[in-house]
Image (cartoon, rainbow, N blue to C red; front, side, top):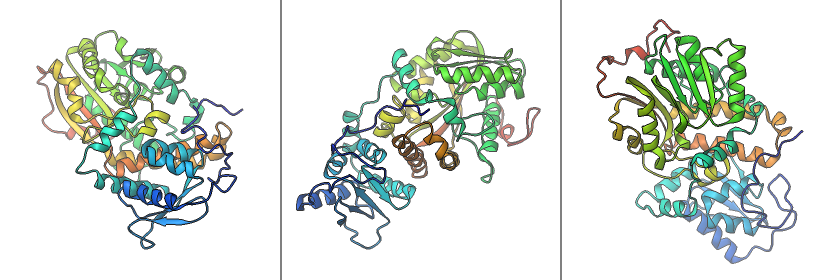
Length: 437
């Protein structure tokens, strides 16, 4: 039975026409006027005149400054109102209209988005008006206690069986994998990522670990199984916590891993290690000092921690469509903004690594599996959902390959800790736990 958990997308019924899933309207979309052609050229100019051609609803093509030469893709509009909506707010309405079949791309979607990102970046390099306007139009949803639960439910409670179709089949990681060998499968790379995190934390048997935002619980079980630690993991997604508890029982780890269905702000206890992989994006900068206070409260005197997060080189909001339709409340921080977690509590940052291209490769593997399972996904969700999620995955690849997004891993410790490694060799040589990665 098909589920309808995905909220309706986009500009509600802009054209008042029933759509088919080729992206064309039933009807001629109205007569094309000189104003329509002018608006199409203005749209191309507004995004930096990339080598695209706009095809209007009557089949007429409009090119930008590149003319007919060097065109790499065609952007097809089903009707005039789709063109007007995209002109009004390209960041938000492109995803809405594409998902609904109101616009379509002739050409490679990844190449189209990468080219558009690079053209737009070049256009706004000397101006901040675009970011200011985007912030005013598309404010992120708040991450209060109640707001965070609603935001997480929107994305992560779509159903475990949906995510199982395209994530890795070993530990169900919905975060960036690590590819020390680029030919690795996503399963191998996710295991390599878990070892990489555990080695950065220098885990030892008998230590206690608290994890904030544990997903389907794979890291907690991995740490307990391979590194001999006890873990308490917090998460506010009911479906994920239920999955994690069942898997811990199956693997005989329930006595070493405790999954708590609660917000990170309610973490209790004293721990040797704090770890958070893929949660900071959902915290919001206005809560960073509060998060730092939670870490300070629960971390022992010589404790250490690691935060793994999507980030940016310069402060800026998440793509408006992804924030509103896919990841509500999401915000990727800069390293400078992350220091609001550490500086007020005098945590010492010991190591920073950027795995940007590793995330692009991870997403490429996810997209391949998503496409391989399209028919099974169609049994769960409608075509609008499928187009939206393909766009989300492809757009995310483009964001990492063009440098719009980064992937930071930051290791920190209490300031009085002196038993620090003299090199990073422990990350890359085999130790007593697992093989070298």
